[in-house]
Length: 115
Image 1 (spheres, helix red, strand yellow):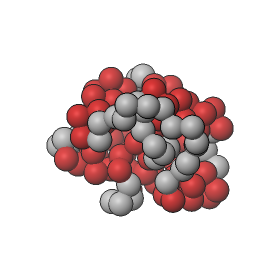
Image 2: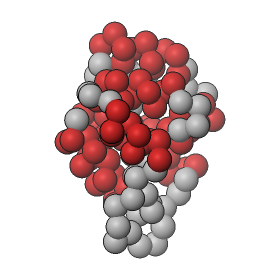
Image 3: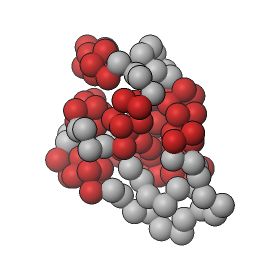
Image 4: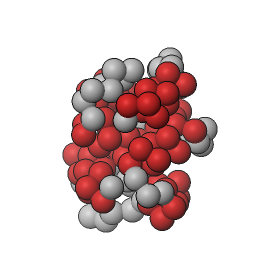
C-alpha cells in the first residue's frame, strides 16, 4: 500500500496542489487498477482538475489531509483504504464523484468484488 501513497504524492505534485488527499489516493488506485470500469483514471483526473484546479507552483512539503492520515494509520491494504474513501461523505474524492453523478455504490461494489 505504501506504493499507492507514493503515487498519490506524485499526483499531488503533478497537479500542483497543496496537500495529498483522498482524491490523490483514489487517482493512484485507479492508475494501478485500470480494469475498474465505473470510472477511469483519466476521467477522475479531469473531474479533479475541473473542480479543484491546480496552483502555479509545486508545494515544497508533503502534507496529508486528516482523512488520508487516518486511513494510512488504520487500514491494512489499498482495497480497504479505497472502500473507506468511498464510504466517507467528508472525503474530497467522494464529493467529486458525487458532484459528477458517478454511481458511488456501483464503484464501491466493483472494487469490493474485483479490486
